[in-house]
Amino acid sequence: MKYDPNEKNCPLPYTPFRSCVVPRPIAWISSTDNNGNDNLAPFSQCGILTFDPPMVMFCANHYPDGKRKDSALNAEETGWFVWNMATESLKDAVNISAMIVPSEQDEFKLANLEKTKADLSNVPMVKESPCQLECKYISTTVIKGNGHV
Image (tube, rainbow, N blue to C red):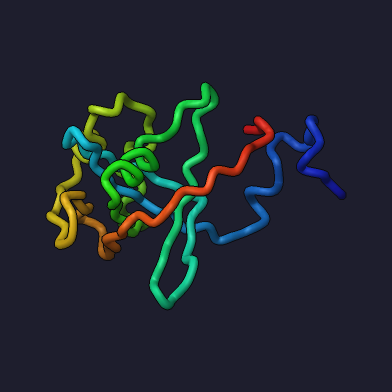
């Protein structure tokens, strides 16, 4: 079957594009806003950009109403975020942290996770995660979407 992702009506129940590039690791991004509110959210559109210097990225699409996600805003405002490894044993907490809640709601508390202090910034890290990368924010690139979900 041939499918053009620019077509409005996909012949399948879900677009196959998301299933073509696998595996897709989850970037579990922790951040803190300028008011000290901690945030934790998973992103399946992420990856390594380069090894030298070591750089990672995550894609934070806008909500359907056009609002930007806290993780992206916080990284831009404070200059920091933490990439926490999401593992199979943490899947329930990862799913809880994916809920859409007000910015002042702490997803660490919702998911019953313990925070550990980062060395370079005030962004907390997920203590239960086996690997954390403290990341200095570099830039945001906005790519206009087509409004597809």
